[in-house]
Amino acid sequence: MEYLSRVPRPPLDGLIDDLYYLEGAPPYPRLMLPPMPSAVLILNLGESFRIRAGTDINTAEYADGCVVTMPTRALEFGYPPGTRSVGVHFKPWGLAPFLPMPAAELCDRPVTVEQVWGRSATAELRDRLTTVAGPQEMLTLLEDELTRRLCETTGLGLVRHTSSVIAAATGAVVIGDLSVMVGVSSTHLAQRFRELIGVTPKRLARTYRFAAAVLAVDTAGPVDWVDLAGRFGYFDQAHFCHEFRTFTGLTPTRYVDVRRRFLREHPGHALDVGPLPAD
Image (tube, rainbow, N blue to C red; front, top):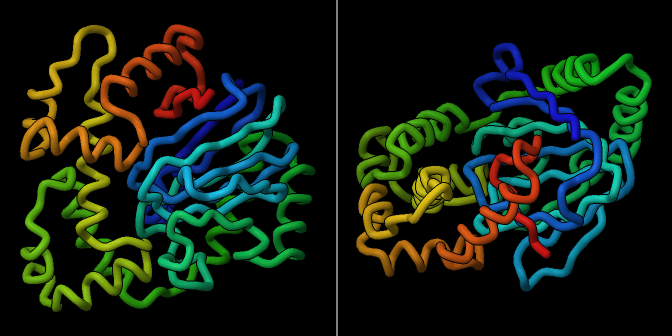
């Protein structure tokens, strides 16, 4: 499977972690993606794919692509045998300048790109992407389109600054101190976060802490869950296990079992960045 990525030039680099190109056969028909502090935009150039956001939501099909604000629970992606797409991994606040609606309206409810940018504009962009010379040229075209669409967003500086403090502490912050630090009420800060990220500062902090803990799991040997929970500020192992189930639907030990399966069956795979087999 071919996977290429690059960081965009300023000012997009303050909103986006990377632009990427993906093509080939997925390792499994269905992949579960644990929630991370990131939003995603995917422009699909191949067969339709499917997404289920949580066990209580039906699977939906996406032909043109999808827009996903920062999730609060795991997403399940169903990939076609031959997938081809370009996409954007946004920082939690980075998608807001490209949305015509508050991010809270899309929380855990992925939508098509057409629903965000319109059918004709999306179709034109997808057509242009398929006519350029190669993946790097596709990423350049996508970067140019995002630069063209970039607009001023009220409150973005406040949310970006506060989110950066949360990220630097990997979520280990006192939420009440954040509003004091930036000089606004906790209500105002929470409202801006919901508008631009889709979640409150508390939820963002929980996601950063969970992501840091998950990425610290070393599946090469036995995992000391008590030590891991303590390192990332969980009250105890029971608290850690509860958060793990909330975010993924799995227990920590089950997560490790499935993660080891991925590494065993597909060592060095291009998608070895967190997805897990869902079958």
